[in-house]
Length: 159
Image (cartoon, rainbow, N blue to C red):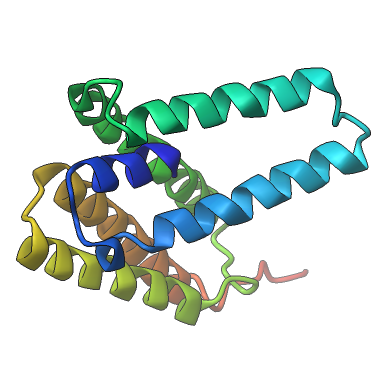
């Protein structure tokens, strides 16, 4: 989320076109802090690590680091974001049981990703962002369709 936030910011895109990234980023940072606190791992090392993170974030945000680096890093986010959906899709296909999976959730995911394709195309037509959301739309739609297909699993007949 950090890379995509910096990528959008440094390219001068409208904040409303990528607002989900900073929001999710703050949520993730709070979650990481709570996990570290719960495991009693908030110490000098973790605080120093967070300081380094903030320094790198500032370097990108203030354009001290060349923005071409973000152009290299941004496409690498696509496989990372796609990997969790692929793992879930493979698990669903192997189990052939989607009773505990919400079709509505995957519909909303596919729909919001598709709407992001439309808004990005109108706002910037950035190929990196369009590719990222196109892949995400395809995978979310695949999960939704697989969930519908496997909604009523066939039970083995007991003899």
